Amino acid sequence: MHYTINTIAQLKPILIGYRKTQGLSQQDMATKLGVKQQTYQRFESSPHKITVERLFKVLTILGVKLYLSNMDIYFNSQKATNQNKNHQEKEQW
Image 1 (cartoon, rainbow, N blue to C red):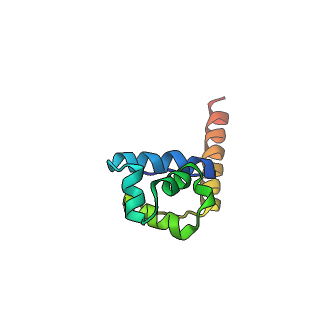
Image 2: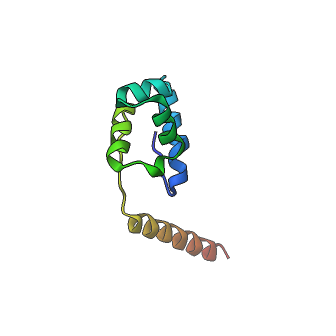
Image 3: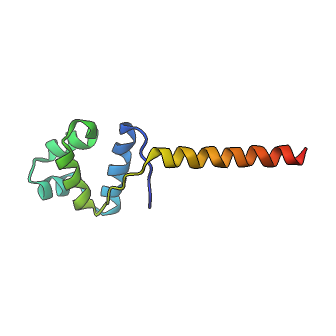
């Protein structure tokens, strides 16, 4: 599955979903990270407050890869799509 994350708030449900899909509890994740369950719970509740290093550890445990994309490509693609759609609509008139 591919998810586009546009805001930090979207990270929480995605991480929880991946953890549950893997059949892992918060305690399981905490053990794999070498932290207490309460520590992992705080991380999962507020993923924006942890280090990038810890986030990568969590993603690795979950078997999730992080991909970065140039937004200009996305926006230019959307712009071209919209321009093409507008052009087609004008031709229909």
